[in-house]
Amino acid sequence: MADTYTPPVYGTGVKATIQRLGGHLAGMIMPNIGAFIAWGLITALFIPTGWLPNEQLAKMVGPIITTLLPVLIAYTGGRMVHGQRGAVVGAVAVMGVIVGSDIPMFLGAMVIGPLTALILKYVDRFTEQRTKAGFEMLVDNFTAGIVGGAMAVVGMWGIGPVVRAITDTAGDAVGWLINHSLLPLASVLIEPAKVLFLNNAINHGVLGPLGVAEALKDGKSILFMLESNPGPGLGLLLAYMLFGPRQLRPSTPPAMIIHFFGGIHEIYFPYVLMKPRLILAVIAGGAAGVFTFMVTGAGLVATPSPGSIFAYLAVTPKGGWFGVILGIVVATAVTFAVAAVLLGFGRGETKEPAAEPAAEPAAEPAAVTEPSAAPVAHDHDHDHDHDHEQDHERDHERDDRETRARSASKEA
Image (cartoon, rainbow, N blue to C red; front, side, top):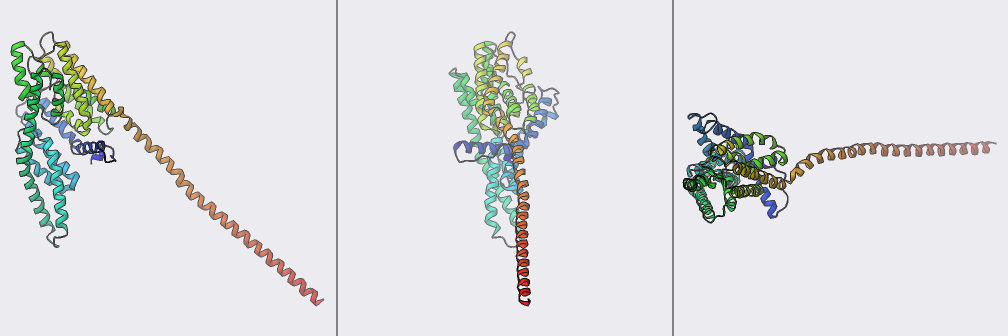
């Protein structure tokens, strides 16, 4: 399934390993991108700050992102490893991770889904040759249930606390950078944390409270803009639309609309997970945007929620439009430029389709030449045999004439 979105990787080096990891992540996430878009649309429309606020319909937002999407990811990852049985146990195991945490567990789903399927795969190999005829279904059902249930417990007690520890560590590190006036470097931690769906924990748990305190003092705060800048995500999606894998390019325009105008940044996270090296692009764009905000003295009076361009403009203080817009534009441009370089400006995407038609005509003449050569060789052999037979007949007639001549001379 990963090969649908990424070319096959050869070699055993570090680069090849990272590329394979990106391919597996793509195989788990990209088949479910439609579910991400559906969640983004529901969120952008029906949350209290959305286009069509609806309290009842907005109740779908939480369960989709905390339960449905992680289950889909774990299901797909398990299916990649061990078919339908792997998909089932992966979906069961991820429920422990979901219940054991209060944040979206996409990272945990990408770990526990394939891992549980791999364990079941080895269990099936062990029991396959040891199960008597007639007991196959019983053994298969119980092994799947035992493995799935056990891994759900492991996920709840093991993976959940690990992710919480990562979140707390990232938040403390961002706070340290802020206290030491190293805001552009905060993007080194904020952007990877966002891609792992820890954006809300960073924004509302660390940046928001600090920004409120600063806004009460100065009337505005740059801290509201560190995580919520829509520029890096927009630049990444633009690069994907122009230079990304051809199968994914049609999905980027709606993702850009949901991200930039709807403020649902999670929509671009799977695109980074598909090619992990692109994290460098969003880090560069985020740092460039923060630096621009600092230079121009930009700031917001409150947290833009969600982080759309409209929400940004709504909480921009009077006279601060230039710095805010410039920071978004710079972040978009820098991210786009770096992502375009990392994607090779689409060269791999244009060469591969061109190579296929060139290879097919080259094979056809060979196929045509070989059959045509056989009849020529056959005709040559046939002509040679025919000439040999004619020579033999002439020799035979000459011998007959000589025999008749000797007989005639004797009679004379």
